[in-house]
Amino acid sequence: MSTEAALALLSDRPLVVLTGAGLSTDSGIPDYRGPGSRPRTPMTYQEFVATDAARRRYWARSHLGWAVMGRAEPNRGHRALAALDPELLITQNVDGLHEAAGSRRVVALHGRIADVVCLDCRRTSSREALQHRMAEVNRGWLERHADAVVNPDGDVELDETADFVVPGCADCGGPLKPDVVFFGENVPAPRVARCYEAVDRLAEEDGALLVAGSSLTVMSGLRFVKRAARLGVPVVVVNRGATRGDALASVTVEVGCSEFLLTLAGRRLSPSAAR
Image (cartoon, rainbow, N blue to C red):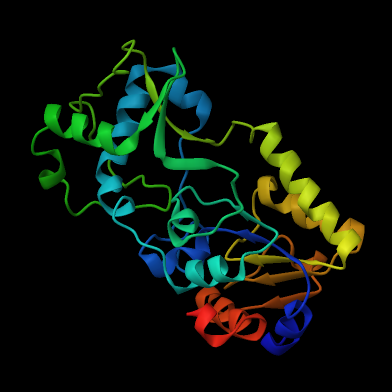
């Protein structure tokens, strides 16, 4: 359907926005399932906790990917959403770019790749600090694998990882995990509850749910579209390519997220606020 129909539906309603990897492609972070994306099998939580070898493989690849992920900056779509300041911004992304753009009310469903948690003592620490520690004990690793292809979650395509050294927790020496929700893990219940509450309020306030840059392949995001549709809340899906939520949407639009969000911000705000 037309972009104009979507903009008209969203122009003056309270909004909850759900974003996915497609929103961050303009920041240089590749999409999971967009047009041209390659099939991939991310490591599951069960694999990660099972063996030292699996954790070594994960961190060796993540060490390379952080060189791209850690430098990414918010794009025009992130900034437009910050200006729109929806009732709640639910993101499936772990890159932290919504917060960096200044969005105030954000639920990062899957956590943030910039944080690390110890699986033994549960202490959280900075991913950047771990990056420096890994660089110290794996000198030359980044240079040797500078041409590795980066994936959306900060992982890379790399098979030979047996000689990579993974530092333990600085406090207790335990195994470290990025503080994100892996495949096979559940999104923490309080995050889900906060999102459901925001969607429920849309039904009371004649609001709308906007999905931007997500194929809605996984239930962690699709459930909010299902909830909105069940409550009679209009749903607009903006994504390049089909999504699992299209049949539930009031309007679907196949355009770039940044382009659409800038136009929407221009409709709802003064031109100076949308820049």
